[in-house]
Image (cartoon, rainbow, N blue to C red):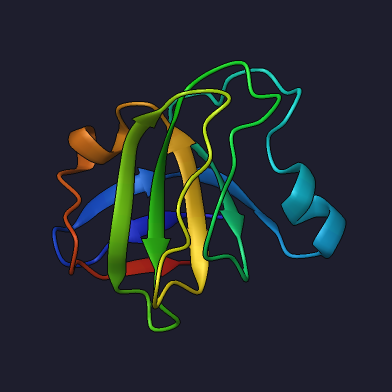
Length: 113
């Protein structure tokens, strides 16, 4: 699937996948190789993440049910615990640097197709 920032007309990920089930969301990207540029994982529903058992940092975008960005982590490192993000209904995990490359900001609208 593709994830786009419609506010800025940029692409966050061209080859993302969705983790919708309880076990898939809980496992996330643990024990995996780093995401390639253009890769991503959408955790839905989700309002908090952890980086336990991760081997690489990630950029994380939290969005509301209508796709508005409510919070972001840039380069969150392995073995960290994220906070509960009020208003978030999904988390988008991206390779480190994806937020800066896309110019994504809190308040922007993201679309998953």
